[in-house]
Length: 464
Ligand code: C2O
Ligand code: CU
Image (cartoon, rainbow, N blue to C red; front, side, top):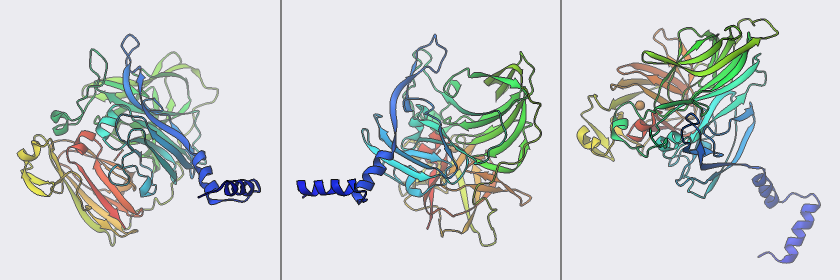
């Protein structure tokens, strides 16, 4: 019990500049900037159509771009004003497990009206994103995501730095509202939940102006539930300098386009080569069609001439190649789905037939198990190397995302691929990845085609 005298005494002490534990806690709490998730309305389609009700961080879809410097601390008091529990996952950030934001694994979901403090230091520069991670298939489809950018202390020489968040929305053709069909068996058992309106930064016709010879850094984020973007350039020429946030050792010339699976990112450095009066485009190739994702109207020529080839971005800490000599070898077999050949799998601890599993609206198994298992796929001592063969024994591509650590593909010539956090695995393909298990905790591994994750394609591993 505090008496009035105690309180006065605390007041006096605080006034005298003495630090009390309570006062410190109060201070950190007030230093937390709020981040609110709420229902809002957005004009996704042309203005003659109605606005769409969305879920957004700060009421925006995408949410605000969160920008930091490398080594900065993110301190946000997240407030959930949505009608459902949720949590925030910071996709691609190598941060402590308790901050990873996976409802049911690293924290309890934040109930409607509740809040949670996210507080961590960001060790890596690069292009990341944040999104809801409770019922992701619904949250992300409703717009609950945003880009998170961590800048290098010495960034590349560019005229502009643009964040382009790609998404496709499923909207009712009449009302332009998002149908409540997040659990549709057709989406879950086939290619996932595709939309019918593609947007970049929440608008269907993003356009801006640029000058010939300008160099733009384009930070692409694929926030779509299932769609793989096949990106091309027109009137722009350049290089891929980072994938999934991590710098490439050598910038790669952008030649034949870029495949960006759900959850993946790419940083491009592009020079405007179109003439004044022309338009340059970021293009999406869709089967035989192609259309503009973003338009750059060329309004003149930059005062300076075109720059030479860029060097690599500065490396992030801990980008060394994994040491395979004592690696723990494991396998990830992806099975199930429509047109697959899975005869049965474990579901809730019992062996069930595929037909039986499908009757529960589940369709996919990882290593013969449907859905989140009680025990990890593997448990690895911190610092050890894991090599994992990933065998896609299904009729669909999958975008397999590992939380908390980046991996490299072991290429057939036993070279290593670039660091990534999401692997595009095509039907029938077997690939192998390796990573140093240097981040302790429980880390999710799942398909980022979110209907697939919800329908069984989810597991976790533990670093002890
Ligand atoms: Cu971007 Cu587990 O998710
Ligand atoms: Cu999948």
